[in-house]
Image 1 (tube, one colour):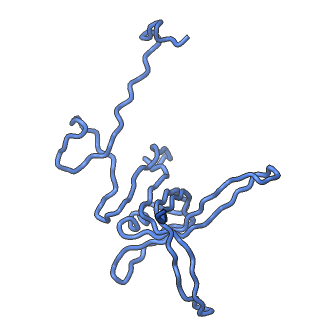
Image 2 (cartoon, one colour):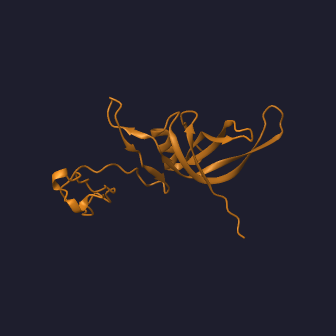
Image 3 (tube, rainbow, N blue to C red):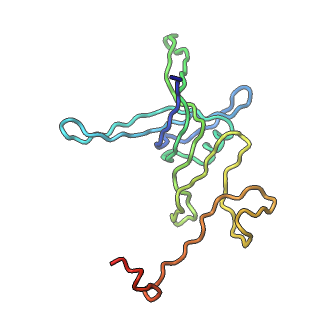
Length: 178
C-alpha cells in the first residue's frame, strides 16, 4: 500500500498572521490554529480538548492570509505534515516538531458588507496556488446572460434568483399534501 500524507483541519487563528520573506524573496507566513474536540468520558462527563497546530503558508496564499485574516478568523486548511528541526539557542540541542504545510487555505468567516454589522453568507474565497491566481470577487449585476464573456475573464458562479412561493390562491387542491 502506498504512503499518504494529507491533513484537513478547521479551526480559529490564535494570533494575527505576519508576513515575512525568505532570503530568495518568497513570501511566507506562520499561522497558529486552535481546533477543539468534544468527547464524553466513560463516566459520562463531557470534555473539550483543544489542540494548537503550527501551519506554514507560502507565496501569494501567505500574502492573502496576512491581508484578510486576523486573530479569531475561522479557516479550513488542506495540507500535509512536515518535520521542522532546529538547534536550541540555549542548550545547543537539536529540536524537532511536526507542523502542517498548507496546500490550500479557505476562509470560513462571513464578510462584513457594511459597518452596521450585517453580514452576507459564508465568505467562499479560496486562495489556491499558483501564486498568480487572484481572489474571486462578486460580479456586478449585469443584463448579459450568465457565461457570456465581456473580456474581463471568468465570472464567478452566481445562483439563480429565487422565485417567491406561490400564494394560497395560486395553489390548486391537487397541490395540498393531505
